[in-house]
Image 1 (tube, one colour):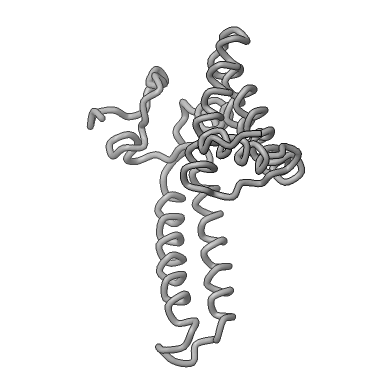
Image 2 (cartoon, rainbow, N blue to C red):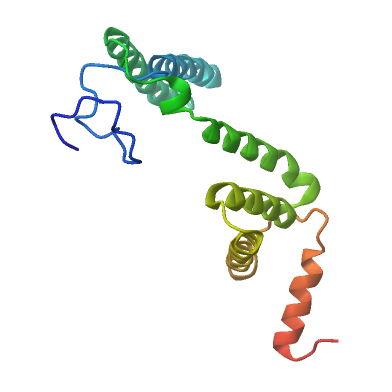
Length: 191
């Protein structure tokens, strides 16, 4: 990124300004809130690590988790303190530049994906997610949407379920029967 770049309003071309040189003396909307969240989470994890065995000795079971979370908490507090000193970038807003509506929609999609995964299973849930996502992002016809979404799902399913034999939530689809049918076809004993 150009070292003279300071966050003009016309920089939203899809490239990242998170690289060094983007905003050296200003903070973006939501940056301080996120730093505070990281600090609070780190302090909570430090407290949880202390609960493992307290601080009895360096060889105690909680020593390494406590040391790790202490470093994390100190780093988060330093980042929070440094971030709080900078003025807010005047040309950006949280809703337009950091968390636009499309990002919030996909956060909702991922939450729904997690909630539907157990009752419906991986294949139907992923199919719904991919079809809706491709339609929303590509803004093309239904033929293209179904071809890309379901083609991707078939590849994902073959790679993870068939090749790597990862157990995916079965749900309403009789996945084991499909796999056995294809194994019988390959071995020549399909009935």
